[in-house]
Length: 195
Image (tube, rainbow, N blue to C red; front, side, top):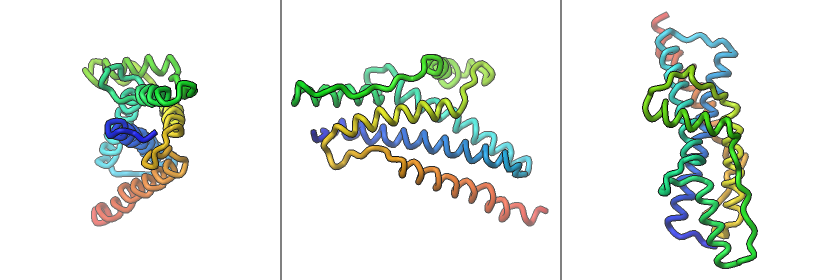
């Protein structure tokens, strides 16, 4: 099955957002590693780093909400993409099997929905009202990627590729190098004259 242009755009957008989620995770993991190494930054840099952390946390939560939980009929979620591909497959082969769906943990789903409604959309929620671990979000992202990959696997279109472990490794390595450059090399260059 060759994807029409709209389904191909949907595929590309989903793949980009899933990889964006992995980049958020890689950035947050880099900050966690820096914290464990007890890297000392000037106070002004700590403020910027904390701001980046909050932005990445929000982006990761919102990205997962957008690609999995958004109920708008015009939304582009992995489940809607899987459903459309399944419909197209059954048109050409009524015996085609179903593509496996990934279900988020119900507690995480509730937390993400509440965050989207109250915190991200209207800012009437404090960070203390909800605690979601980055590891939970990464696990959800892995499950969503599994559903996306299972859908891609049944598409016979050379333009469509699964998200591989190699791509995720490239995101992690590239992000690690970028974070090191920004927060270590940049500090050496910008603050050496101040010491």
